[in-house]
Length: 270
Length: 263
Image (tube, rainbow over all chains, first blue to last red; front, side, top):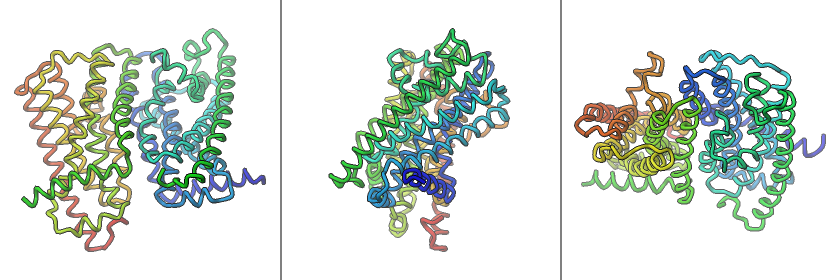
């Protein structure tokens, strides 16, 4: 197995073991999306239209987002508290490979959060989600998951440098839910927020997931006037390009962060 | 006099201690970003559901008051967690200081921090989301906010006292800060909850505080809202009393078993 893959796999396994050793940590990751979904479903009660679709899929998406952002920040913070970050940095493996393994495991947990929100939405709130195209739904979900993971890598590089990663995480979570239009169309937002929405891969991911779930959504997609499959293909293409850009940016940032940390020697105080 | 000294020093140290993990610039960012983004999120959800200015105002005021909970619930519960993580808990329990001022003092400073959060949030509510504050009874609103901050700090102590018995209090800090959004009439009236869940709402001081604040903003006088405030005060005092008893029971168990951080 190539060295990079071996490191990614080991980091993934370690992250899983950490989680299994203390599974209650999953609660802070998922509580906000769960509560936000319940509030949205209560507010949408009595409204006609695809509101359930927005609330449940949006809540699920937020579960994925929240877990990735929270875990990326907290994983580094925890290393700082436990004094193991120096050891990780001193290892011959590249930091980005280690964080990639963790990021994938975080996103995978995020996926379980999404499934949990979907189950609560359908069982408790009786929201019907007749997924029109299960294959495209799954493909969209997996690509969105990868996009969220890649974005998690960029956050993680910032968290290595910041002393207040956990606080930054708390501060970033809700603005990202808003800007990506997780639970409402971004058309409701002021126009100056659109550029920020368009550079977020999950903005396109949630559009693709909604398209794959419901035919009613075709009139509200970013690609109105196109056929459902073409619109979905466009969403996925844009998201893949953005995800690749995230990966390139993250690689450059990690190189810079590693160099800076080694030169300044202020890793733990940072 | 000695109790007052313990109360004040406990309050000051508790506030300063949070800057171990939170730098001042980030504290300011949290004050502005967190309160604004949470309010904005629910306002947009409300607008998307077809709600007009009345719903926007309802949601904005609810979230402005709920902003308190980050200081009075989350931060107060965090004190418990940090005592355990930082290894200061045995030292706290070894001091001869009277426990009541020590326990209550550490929460009360966060009440003032919470007042700043509400002021910032009300500013956003008025100037960004167009909530009309011109008819507000200033005295009634000020008393309501102050009392809500006090009683919610009491609620934070209750959960903090409960969390002492567990290894990771941060889990409870997250749960109890967020569930307030469901039960306390922050974004929708308590009556929108299933009937079985509605009594739970009235165990939280915030439910009364938000209700009173909405009335005060609509022009109700202090006298008119005083029955609601009396109920709020009662729930707050009961919370502090139960929290203190839980803290004492933890201390007793910890001394018997020698398990302070491990529980």
